[in-house]
Length: 336
Picture (cartoon, rainbow, N blue to C red):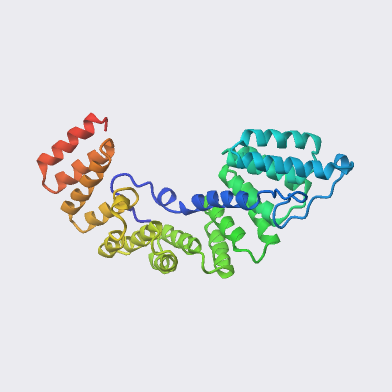
């Protein structure tokens, strides 16, 4: 695979395929928002799930209403910003009704909102163990497992969700992204293609496919896929970055520059756009343009020693020795 970096690129494993983590995190947020219980009394079940049948301790008279009361009290506390109190209410209800899956699901929501994904995953596992093992809960468990770094477990949950929701593109998309992390490129590609068939209007499907092809040095295919992502979301910077990387890999740095120069100035001054722009200027033997860009970035982030050092290096390459010395001194003072 071609080396792409001047000044510290971490390669495609770190620079690319970063879409997956962000999308998985957003999915967790979305699931927990949609799943929140009602306040209208009675059924406090998540959408798509039948209220659990009361059994064991819950079979006693009034148990269902007490469970619903706990769920709705917790929801009210969450809406009032009292997440810790909501968690305590649900923990107490679970101790009283340990076979009620809705309590575990709601506590998972509270724990996830408190940025405690490991504890949230434990609650989701317990809900699944009680049943029913519906597709939405399997999908949520996969999402949270991925956030915890449990990628093998996440894959198992997404596969289960895929089987239970065969017309829903999400399990296939998220399974593919976990498989990317597990370095199962062929399986990931197959699931991305399936997700694209189920819903061809999701840009991240095509963007992730482009990343996969680029990681395997197939710039032409990457450009085909990312073109679809850019058509759907023309203002998203990450698709421009993927397209520019593919163009650069295809020995078309001038076209890559044109793609990147279409983003906002503030975006140009931050990695990965800045790094890629500098690489293209380097390939085109335009150190003056690279130096000017790097100086703007260093001035915008005046406490960044690495940027000051990089600006010094490009200024020296452009023959601007005095300014190069100035930025070198700044880098030294900043500890770089």
